[in-house]
Image 1 (cartoon, rainbow, N blue to C red):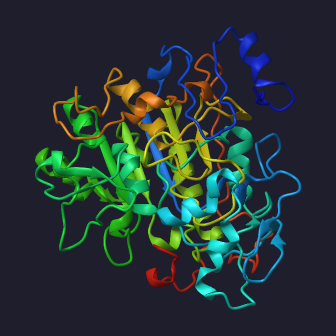
Image 2 (cartoon, rainbow, N blue to C red):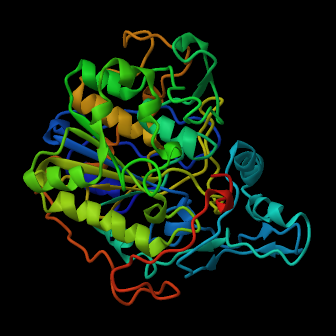
Length: 458
């Protein structure tokens, strides 16, 4: 068991001294880690507002591979380079705009290569069709000075270093999992029992506006009278959030409940935060330019996220909030940890996650195995008495075989509800002296050409 550190002391000794039961996740070894006892639920109800911020396409090692105390890039790594010959070692990459690699189901399987984690370069080179030279950046990692705000959040609050994409594929299933703990294709969406688990589900489109027939968590939220909003950076459609990152309008139960009005432009989030009227559950998804999805700029994405977090920290609601920040998939970038196998859909490759709250354990690295399923479990335990998206109990049957929330933590190990609440950490969205190249403009609103046809498989 690898002890987690709270800057100078082990998490084990700190939690034992506090008289709190805890569990630490073992490094992933390809088998599901049984869910073990977490701290008692007493205290979770101090959290009145959960805010889930989902960014795009970064592996854990590409952002936090050298974070002190984390399970980062091991020494001696060198991933085979089939086109140019030899192998590629991880290297610091200060480029503000990256390329990444393909990231569909087949690419995830090839990247992980039965746990050897050595297929990343070869997959990134597929576009070269075997012709050298074929440069790639998937073995590059950003340094703390490239992403100082993300690093500050990780140091002051909780960094989860055993957090995996819920599925082993691209953005569409990842965003479906974020709200429903499943991904499927439905031959007759009006009939949920026709849905079949899939890592490459049908995409919501004009031809298929409501393709998601199974149950998502908003069905339970509505049933338990829990307020929620799904905020879209730039709104929906052209210039805003694309359909692949905005699945809720495609769920039949959202239509049936008359809750489509809860899907709102991001400006409403800032208004709610300023007035202290955030809903109990918030999701925020980015437009392309703010997403960090290669080639979108890291500096712009970090600035956008910082403004979101600053808004919560400046809000009267900060004192009762928990922010879960994560990235939807690995984007083709290298990571060293073999994903565990839970079912036919996942887990996928490890991605970063940061837990921010007045009650987050300061400086804690959480090694408990987790995923976006864990965010749902926290929401369910906090607001709905532990109700689950379970076709046997939720009143809306669908054919899923696995209840993902029952296989994961609710992340309470990352919180200490007895501690003196942490103060806000208001940061400059565009920190000076960054080592990103080229140097971002003063307001970090730079841009590059963004065309989905050039975005790997997105």
